[in-house]
Length: 183
Image (cartoon, rainbow, N blue to C red; front, side, top):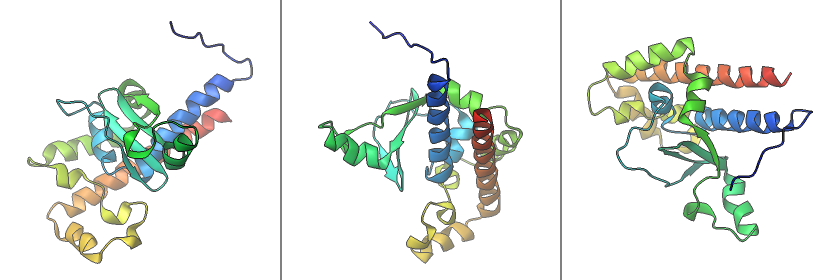
């Protein structure tokens, strides 16, 4: 039996949904190595499902058949531990934004078509070109300079850098649109 949701006259339920969307978009924009691939495909690519979490900076996440699971790292680790729940690497992030929700949030953005075209132009295997460039990560100065150099000498670097900037701008636009909804 599922619990019925009572809509608050003052928009509290809608605020919770908006915050979940904002958090998912922020996680994608700020830390996820596979954000470009998620935005380009807007569906799960693997034949097997996973619930293996990854974490970086303020976010833990998992891309799975259901969509994007995410949670603030502090809550995913220490918060869950304090409540006596499974925590950290033994825990799948609690929040979920489905593929349909992600499609509604970013699928019709005009920049996405250029990203998709660039991805489709890449030879297989293309996973390395789809990964977040080290300089666009949450803490680029902590990485070894060889990682930055390796990115820059790759023949696909100019297109990769441009595609990632498009994705970051697209996600920034989607975040701004969600914030405007709150006004």
